[in-house]
Amino acid sequence: MSKLVSISIIQDDFKLPTPEVLQEQNLAIYDLEQNNFFQLVGFEAHDEIKLNISLSGNSLAFQIRSKTDEMLKTFFLSLTPLKQIINDYYIICESYFNAVKNLPIDKIESIDMGRKGIHNEGARVIIERLEGRINTDLETSRRIFTLVYALTYER
Image (cartoon, rainbow, N blue to C red; front, side):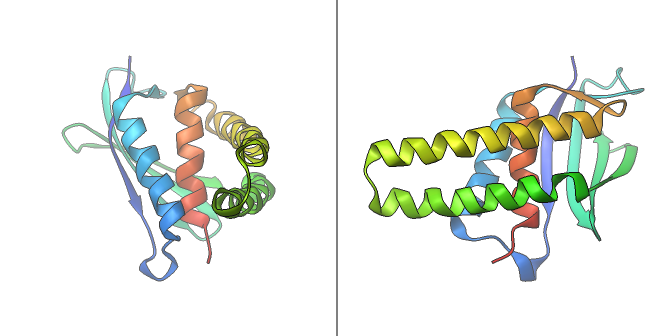
């Protein structure tokens, strides 16, 4: 079974996310490095994979290497199918971050349930967009969606 052993995010230094979003990004990377399923189609013999994710125009760039740094594949995914989900996620995350400061726990939990629903929707779209290129599970895809969100976040 293939898995990610290293994940790097290549971000524009002028568009770094807020501390809250950066914390979410770092947590997603940590969680991915602990547990994931990520199998590059056509390269199943590689059981340990390194992933670099960056933005290239209106696309996500996935650069995939072997554990020995051999370049395996680079491909691009359009952000267009994810734009509305990312915008919705941005809005609900802002509500969540503000709620944590001021609202009672039941209101925070309600907002968090909505946030998880949008997060799952983004993860499902990523699974669909990666079909035929990368096999992954929902939890891995959820964490990748978090990385996409952090990459596209604008203050």
